[in-house]
Amino acid sequence: MTSQKMLSVELLLDMFRRMVLIRRFEDHLYQLFLQGLVPGTLHQYQGQEAVAVGVCSALRTDDVIFSTHRPVGHLIAKGSSVRGIAAEMWGKATGCAGGKGGQMHLTDVSVGAMPSNAIVGANIPIATGAALGFKLSGIDRIAVSFFGDGASNTGAFHEGINLAAVKDAPVVFVCENNQYAASTHISMVMRITDIAERAKSYGIPGLVVDGMDVIAVYQSTTEAVERARQGEGPTLLEYKTYRYSGHSRGDPGGYRSKEEAQEWRERDAILKCRELLITNYEQNEEDLERIERECQSEAEAAVEFARSSPDPVPEACFEHVYADREVNA
Ligand SMILES: Cc1ncc(C[n+]2csc(CCOP(=O)(O)OP(=O)(O)O)c2C)c(N)n1
Ligand SMILES: [Mg+2]
View 1 (cartoon, rainbow, N blue to C red):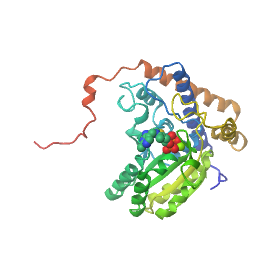
View 2: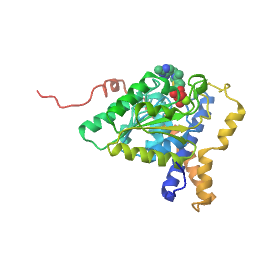
View 3: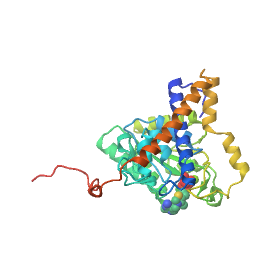
View 4: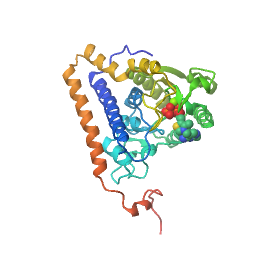
């Protein structure tokens, strides 16, 4: 998979903007966290932006994604508003899930972001189920499951992918291999280095792709999505990437060397995309700086909106518990 094919400048600029928005929002949250102002917990996505944005750029709005305990990037990439995400993290009525989900359960069905699931690996069979549902109902939509290297060692990974393979379910499995599950390096828990190799045992294609290259991510996902839409079944995509933050709030990440972190930062996807826009797409520095300033303001305004939003009313507890349906008298 290469980045050689030129994308339209509009698409690349859009991907750049969404990656910057994720980074600026996450960085802003971290500053607020250090001041003790963020309620609940925080699992941050800086470093992995190219995966969320490359994958979601290959999807339609009505395709669905199933995210994890690290969902902010996925939701922004799928088109959810930063205001709704921030308000959800602050538990407010204006949150994308009405304040009932919080950071680890971000949900925005209006853009196809189904409930994020903090149980590691659990969304893999759930995405398979959604995809099977689409197939059995003759609905032209696909499902994507995002999960980590750690999740690929759960039983749910095997059950979900095997079933999807056997049923040719229209689902794309996106493994974000950031090398660590909390403080555990992959070399301590698996004998292989490429998780995509496991695709062979399910009889589906598996691909290893540079997760720091948004174009390579977009192109590889586009092919997998095409395959799923044509009824040819699932693909396992492994994106090699790195999280710059600790695993969750309060984790300084002392189990990783400074040199390792520095090497990955030198391959930063946003910087790479920025350079490409200037050298190959005739964009100028000032325009890109303007986008960066706009994203910063959007991130800050979203948090202000969240903090000044009303709490949910107590009666809201009874909403969204059961699906609304016609009841015959
Ligand atoms: C079934 C289960 N086991 C353990 C945990 C605790 N836990 C939360 S995140 C995490 C690490 C997950 O690593 P990975 O799948 O690589 O995702 P990453 O955090 O790197 O994005 C663990 C062990 C959990 N939430 N669910
Ligand atoms: Mg991981």
